[in-house]
Length: 412
Image (tube, rainbow, N blue to C red):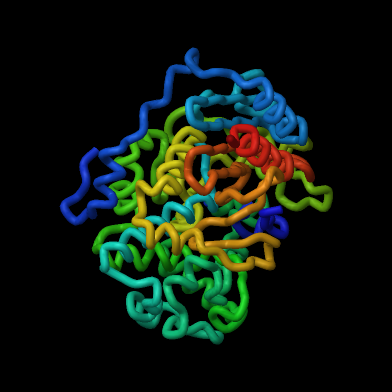
């Protein structure tokens, strides 16, 4: 099962910004703009799928406060939702609500890096030191020995910074630091306090620091911020109107459900009021963590999106509309990720389908919002599901099962 939970909240879970192009954009990106996907049809035109609704109900029944899923295949499109948008209320989940996609952000970051590689502006074999001299040093960490490919593939050996972020580790830490802003340089500096996990390419270990560094390299190569490049190259060309790079803003724009984190209390659940204050009431929902400055996850997990936008992005990516064949092949060439028991490429995981073959995707989480995305190798079938709380012990499995069933169900 493709999942990497914190212990309990020490890291992002594997289970994740573009109308007119800039003059520096490439023909590849222009192609994405020219082939902009059709807008989301009105809710009344969506064809409800009974099987999808049953699967979403199962996700909700596993302990999630709210759940929402959307699936696409040639000539078909369906959505389903269950639960409520806020604990203790009857308010339904928003039809196209926004949520923090967590580590699914990594696929976006890797796509921008690979576009720059395709443009000849950098190489996957460039060292981190070439673009960020002196940044990765200390405790055995050495940017002169780490390549961009190793960053994107999590074979760098660089330690993960997120276990050091207080807001992700306890309810008290969240209350104290939910508005704190981190710079990328500060994040890397925190990570450098820990020893290198292994020599580059000698093992595999998931580290969000890899993608913080990737975001910094994007800035050095282009002269523009990570957020600017994502908007210019992916978000605007694909018409991802529900997707945003929040920077240090702690708020989710537009319609959204509230999120709840079950910090480790010894019982596997936390307590919260559902008001955003994180104060305890003795309920089992958890701490309301909807308000959060996501700057600690720049490049690695800070994006906000919707199920519709994620389906559109993954379909465009695997459909060859964002990357040239050589770069898409590099992204989807996977290695063993024994820490997860799956295979991992460059910002994408490869997972087996019960009906045969495999699919690509990148589950993610950032404090209470969990998402699971899947897309077939040809980009023609996609499925995205998210929940608004940590749920129960079987929630993640119910989410992955939904994605697998829907990708198999629409298979020719």
